[in-house]
Amino acid sequence: MDVSVLVMDDVADLGLAAVLETFAVANSLRGTLAAPPPPWRVRTVSIAGSVRSGNGYTIPTVPVADPGAPCDETQGPAVLIVPAINVLDAPSLTTRISLAENSPVLELIRGAHSRGVHIAGACTGTFFLAEAGVLDGRAATTSWWLGPAFRRRYPAVALNEALTLCRTPAVTTAGASLSHVDLALSLIQLVSPALAEKAARYLVVGSGRAQAGHIVPEVMAHGNSLVAAFERWVRHRLGEQFRIAAAARELGVTERSLQRATQSELGMSPRDFVHDIRLEHAAYLLRTTSLSLEAIAARVGYLNAGTLRNLVRRRREMSIAQLRATPGLR
Image (tube, rainbow, N blue to C red; front, top):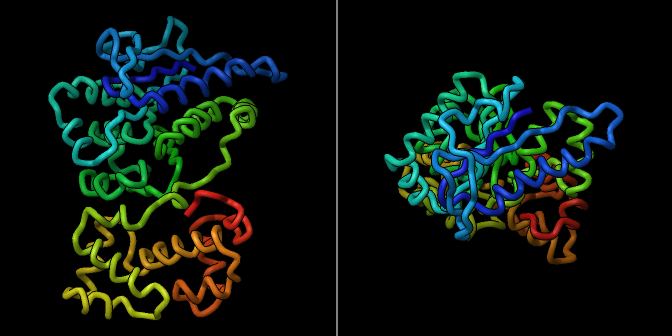
């Protein structure tokens, strides 16, 4: 398989290194399989001769007009990967994407996609895929904190930022920085599931974790004044039983208006957002205290522990015991 990694100035050092190293590990492990696949031929390409990384390092590249073309004359399946750029806030990212100097990059992505090249992007790189139009009508993910901005700018994309990885037949997207590894492993798996599994073991990754456990509700809400006010209102009443209609009334809007606001900004209903806020605090208490599940459920507004247990399994895809033992997950 021919892999072209399309980079530009400010490419994220960690994301680029993760992609290149994952393919390098897979290539080094090919010989351990009884029937190894052909090697991955990986090149770093750009519209110029070199780019400067987000940390200021010069990255030599192959200047190309067609990043979807194979690395040599041997025809084979081709992949174009767009790693993240080191621009983490949504306003700066959308300004960057809109610059005229990025038009050739978008045209390269569109052209490769039209020729059947599998397109992949991770973190902020997914915005370039969306801007090029290759995600329209498709399911996709991105870095969780960029979800609201992505949803507003690209309403034609079926976004689910709770996912670490979203693979469709023609396009693959991944979430935040370390998801670059998941992205590369998923592309290796298309050719050799056995090699992808072995590479994941060597890298100690690929557990199928979701971004959902890392989402911070107040960060997701801050881009919309009504959603942010709703988030604060819920936090002040975290241990209480309340109706969404009561929250809307106290915020001075109709329940329908609140529904529209959370759906357009977060891609979820007000009730689901309440569950996320309650679950975030419950996860913190599970990891940092010895309180019983019943006591924690009561503190976050649930009448019984079974409701919280089911919520953890449904929205975090793990058991209470696993959540207690997982440091750093919300």
